[in-house]
Length: 378
Image (cartoon, rainbow, N blue to C red):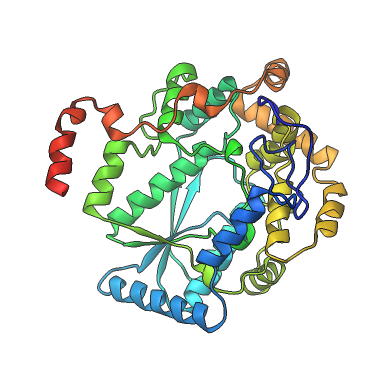
């Protein structure tokens, strides 16, 4: 991975993660990497199967329905058009839960993603709230991240989606989020690749942005404190409580919801497709497929040999890449020269711009009363 000093090349003896993609990867005396070890720990802790999983799942379903009595919705559910959220919407309706679908439109949805979302909500007769992010503001943050040369450009969407979900739950006084997060397909993710930190976004935009963020759904520390106090919410990863197999799930949503495959994980977004398949490998030296496939190896859904064979397949056809690149550059207002300079620039870690600031760092006056607040809590 570019931008970090790494040890000599080494690949995990169990999965396909290696030192090229993760500068912080570690191995035990059997050559098994920390991602495999962490997966095993998380599977034991969070994944339930058989009667144990069914009992816990039913208990949570009953809790969601009970809390939803007298309300228009039982819970909120983020809908992206991807596999996990689409399947979760399907099973939620099967359980008799009344979810409000929430979609965050950042301006990069593919036509197929729009069609999939429409098919899902129409087939399931599910209400959908769509929050359209102001394009000029979103574009300005994306350009700021490009100028900052940091890796997690997708954090801009993820942080906005999280804020929109919180605001929607608060609006309808809903207590629960149904999350598509799951251990068996989404546990393996190197920390060097991600930075879902609001203060980091603010710092980067303050340095490189030019458009005031008047409507971008930014969950500042003060806002988050307000929402947590006035409408406490809980995120429920229900996919961990069932037999969740990627190929089977795809077959179900294709048959039941008319869902159509994008050809890659999170390829429902044109920018995400270009980012994952072109920017990440060519600028940062990261092949995100290795994490996805390693996760499937850990959960026993594919073998290491099968994963290595899949890596040999054409991931991003040249013609698709050419069309996407032209579209992305035009939509962002970038020249070929400016983009080439960005691709050649040395990556910088997110920490370079500061991360993890708390509400007390943002509002200095609160530091004065923090001891009093802690005393009252105690």
